[in-house]
Image (cartoon, rainbow, N blue to C red; front, side, top):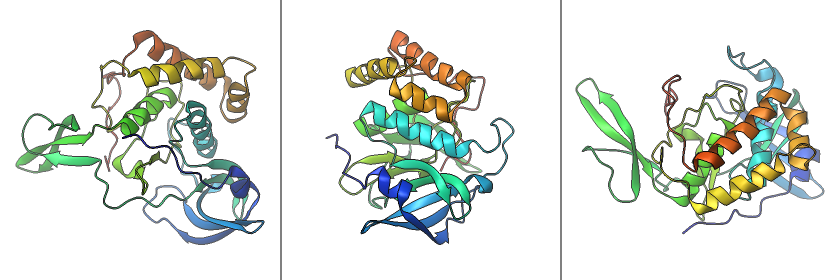
Length: 268
């Protein structure tokens, strides 16, 4: 059964609260700081990614990843699915950066698996063969759930170039969040994801309705379009409109283009 997002602290806490750095997420390629934020008697754990800690990328402009993370949140909110944790752009101890509510994942949730055989079992979708060791391959599968399918649609809209398994956070209670949206909204097709299980399939009615909402919300002068224009280039906002229009026209989940690696590395 699909779940509604829990009621997290509003973005005012993240935007106006006092940030205190508590530690660093060491495995991240960019500076990712674990913080607490306190405002008017309320407190929450959060992630702070300062722009100054972003590693340069060959295909994305320097110093833009934080804005892209916030833009992904804005799109997520417009869908009504609440797939991205509350995220703001603000000043912090190390300058401007993205601040996002910390989500504790349910360690018992299972969204990805490696299985024997050539076909996915009921309740799972096949992604492709994965090399397990020198002499053995296994079938990589992901769960066939409404929440993951919503995220696959969101990733197609924002052109997510890095949907890894570690970016999927199933929260206690069943709600799913996606994180790490710094490499999104490129004008070129860069969709790389582990969620290819629905590739080419007809979009569910729920998704087509959401795409209709996004199409209206992205019209020039609408609040979402105005907000995205503050975070992205004009060409990138135009590309978002184009991807929404293409999805509405095809009525199907996108398929790998063959012009760009379709699965991120490392995949988890």
